[in-house]
Length: 252
Image (cartoon, rainbow, N blue to C red):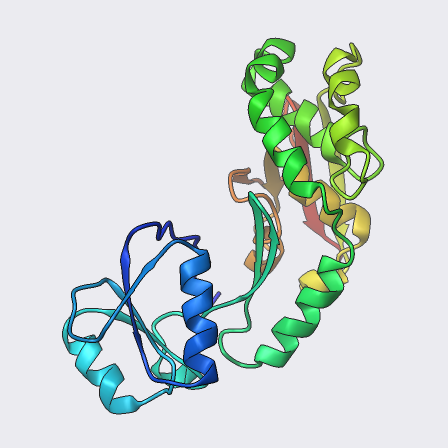
């Protein structure tokens, strides 16, 4: 990754905005929508947006230790502004590192069409059900598996279903346990993560731990959950542990 995606809480905080015209107006609307307090160049702030991309303004702000976004000048940007899908409190940000705002917009439009209008309501319902979820699955690993199973494609609270919120009570009342402890094998046909099968990609996204041969490339391991344990191993484990474990090996 060339950038680290983050979500900044800007409510009541100053953000410098310079420049005039439509670009400045659009950035002002975005900042105000996020609750920021828009200020001028001479005031104190940690972030700044230079809406006209002026290099001299960028230099002055950077000299003060301020992180800068310069419109249409990715070479001058410390951070970029993504295309946003807003299903409050769910936010999906799509960035291209400043390479193409048009591509980010096109992806936003395509993805937004897939997401139910009530997706934010599901997030709120899950937050409010935290105590009930902990009571249903007291152990952290079982709780994660239970939530994963509920939110899976076709699951009872599939986030792409407009009926997911209504299904929350039945999901919590269901006595069926998540999948039992198991070890799955993934045989890699190439070192290119784009060649992963859909099944392999889903397993990588759900695994608790990943045992892998030394020659499995980092690009493949990067497709796994960030908090999944990576364990280099010469042979497939006999006692992999609880939850979902994977054994990754390359085909000769």
